[in-house]
Image 1 (spheres, one colour):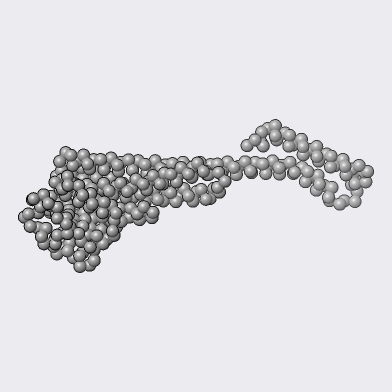
Image 2 (image 1 turned 90 degrees about the vertical axis):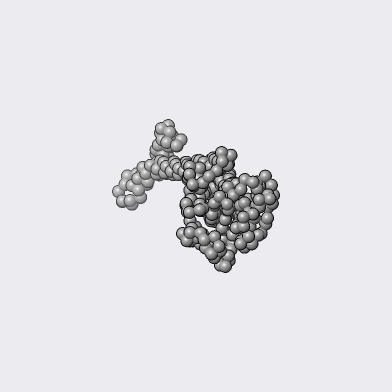
Length: 317
């Protein structure tokens, strides 16, 4: 579907004009949105707008890395939208000139709809032109990143605070799942941040001081998102290392106790082994109290070794 809006010199905003009427002299600027276009509508990019073949190819071959390319008469942007649940990346391509903005996306996106409705409903936005429409698109895309990272932070806090009774294997799997989703976010947020940096320092895009402040605000948001992602990645590493250290310490403690128990029973097993050899001439075998004497000696020996190990603090580890 292709939808259009255009501002006339009479400051009237016209909706869904045919494409051939957008180039009339009465039009100050216009916005064309390709929303899940069919094959015939896709051909409009080359037949009507005559965009460079490379930029058109980038539209048809998703997913490109967020980027900014300069062409004669317009600038081409590749932006990313993120699905809230799956974190799948969805591409938004933007052709921007002084007179028009053309947005292209293969799926219906709520962010584009929000920007479109905002531009349509606020009359004060009309005179700000295509650069403001582009700002709205960028702003809505970036705003949708925040709920995703906040949700990951909450999940990470739950893993850190509510880990009692959970198996280590389950906790580690949760942490690696969060790290994987943070990596997906990182692959979108960092290139978007670099794109905004190029945009703010570009001499190919004319904007007023007020317009620049709007894009600087988006850049600040992306810087904040990047810092949050890195901080949470470091936190997952710390939690993972702590869990592994706790598990290793617990294993060492268990091995220590088992070693002490084994050490106590070694001399007892030795004594039992001697009197279990069944030789015919063993003086203690014919002694009336030999059995009780050996058991008593074994008990005294075991208790003595236990008390000595306990005094050394081996059971406190």
